[in-house]
Image (cartoon, rainbow, N blue to C red; front, top):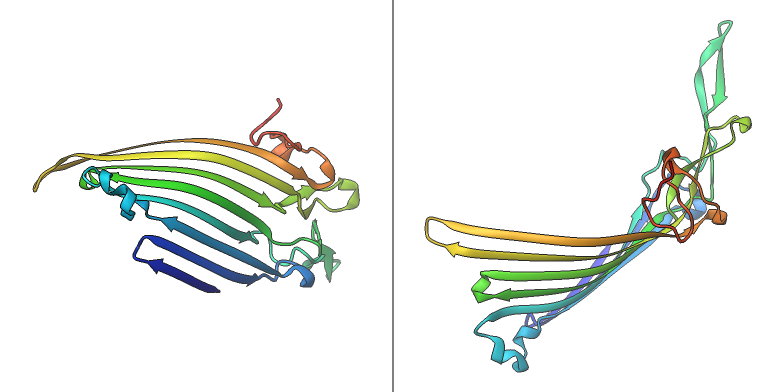
Length: 225
């Protein structure tokens, strides 16, 4: 893990980080994942051309961030075909294959998010406004895909595809009353989210949970009854 940052007069802010994670849940060739993130912010309220707004606008900042996150939340050693020991037949101990077929090709699921935001503070902190727009893409989604029962197995852990979510969020906070013994704060927010399936393995639609319907180009949350 490494991290570096730069701050110039609290007006120009830069930050970047890098991490490398390993997980024994994946095969030897896909054990390691590299993840980057970075951010930049500009406090334009401190610029000379914004002096005219100072009586009302105390702080104004424009920011951008980029980040990657890995996910390995599957069963242990699912890249291998596993054997379960136990039970007996006529007093002789036995062993059998587990119902999950191993897949040495599975790898880290990665989520990458880009975010643009605006922060405004008015009236000595009595009123603030925040706006964010983001695009979040998850690739190599980990999913236990069902197998035909004739194989003798029930599922196979795979990287099933990619999804993308876009959204906007707005937050307003106000403190209409501030007294030594009493204060009143009001907060309100609203968000808009849209998600779509970008890619599926082999382009084949399927029904996760026997209810939702996933297809390339389709919206997340579609279901057929």
